[in-house]
Image (cartoon, rainbow, N blue to C red; front, side):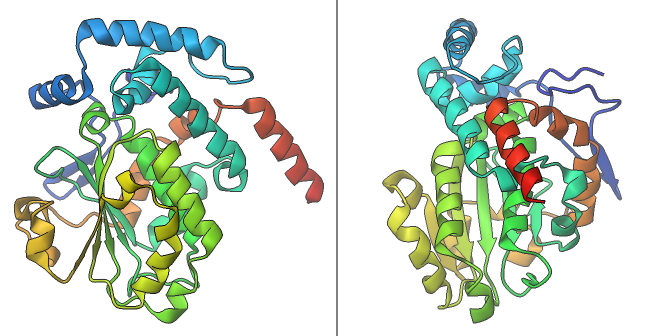
Length: 318
């Protein structure tokens, strides 16, 4: 089966049954609400869209050593939407996205769900099965008492986030509305805080600010103890104003959180009213595994020559 937004063929649309609820990737075309937002916020009309795709295709043909699926309009759109259909900005984003993969080769080399089972088994990363009131995907990271830092490293957490966001990029509705992230830091210890290093902080900030082809609309820190100030001090100096303004600290103040993510869109554990089951990490893993070939296909693009050089160096060291 050919799904327009995917680079690979799939036997069936990826989904997992959870009792009465079906967890799935939403790969169909935009809803009427999505179309309205795309038009009002992203300048998306059939005419602008068609012209931007052609302009972006022309620009990409001139980028040296970059291998991308030039004949795939839907692939172009996933980069054009976060750039409001300005082809030059999308071309620059694509280059930064793939340059980041070269720079952090160790994180991205053959990155696919089948090789990252551990992060999902730890159950500290989850995407809510429902969207929020603005149609945004909600990613939850529990990096406090749930996180066994001796069993799963922050590098593995990063890889898990990349796998989730690559999946989110496939969804037209998420391309338009974007995503919000909740960091639940309840129970963060000093030993856990020490896992955060300046190089890790720089990688995360560079990734979010320059290399994620998705609209990150808010980062919400909840249940953070005072020790978290020490962690945030690593990130603060390298944040640009746009991202810094989207990081909001709520502590245990749920009313503060509800101003940004409606109570009707949150699970009971955060005082919300959503009665869908909590999706366990292994259930997400099962869903992402069905897309393993898609990640393999994603890895076939970029600055392939530079990636091969990195791979060759790595193999020589072995």
